Length: 397
Image (cartoon, rainbow, N blue to C red):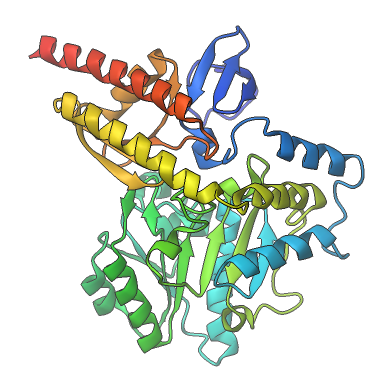
């Protein structure tokens, strides 16, 4: 799309898709690609899921937008269902992951302000994190490649090395308001925090009166085999940001919080024009219909094991190409010995779509509805791509 009227901010693959069916995408020329990227973990139920299509089209014939000046019944229903299924007592709906993170940060800072500590605004985060593209969220992530050229880094964010809990403890001071992390880093290379680390962070927050914020924008909504990734550790946050999969492809997000953490978010202190609109709420409720059905998440865990075992076999077969397999559920990462960009291109040549990440990793994020047959087909294509890379590597040496 070079030379078009669009900002030149994306290095797009030379592909245009016309339609999708489950875990498959079809180009405008009729070529079929197996989608192991799911729009970067967004299309949780695949493409054109009939229940989501029906919910959206039914609502589209009624109301699209009313604003938050009025009651939105879909918000009440979806909020109550999220509260019933999580640690949270309160929910605020918005449109994107970055907005959810911004809302989480504002909730934490406002909590301390109202409780007599306006000096407590700092947030400790971890290197490798990705929290969004707004001025505050790129500061929270702390990655130089996203900060460069956008003026001074927004104040109040300090990073420590990944999983260095001792460094967190040393950094806590009178201005610290919260600790924020992704239980499983996505862009950082599919790196999961150990349960013991999450427990220590919870203890530090309780000891120092801080709020613990989990960014489950990518790792939440069934992606790891439970509704939310924090459930694996048993460690509950005070605030959590959710997006991507919760809309199944429709832009929506949410901030979840305990009653205490949300107590300072009173009328007029925060808002959104589009957040919680009737279309988004119809789709969000439809997504939960599927995810909360008996046995659905158990089946995600089963399919994840099938896929991870298959990937491990490929890694054993091509140790010159693949260093290790990472991840949980259907949030998997191939740590490469070759360039991850080159491996991703090889996958695309075999008509399989994946997503590059940091730490020389390629992310595999298929729809949670993927079939066993599609998993086997995907593994065959990944093996073929690894074989081609291995042959090239051998020839080069």
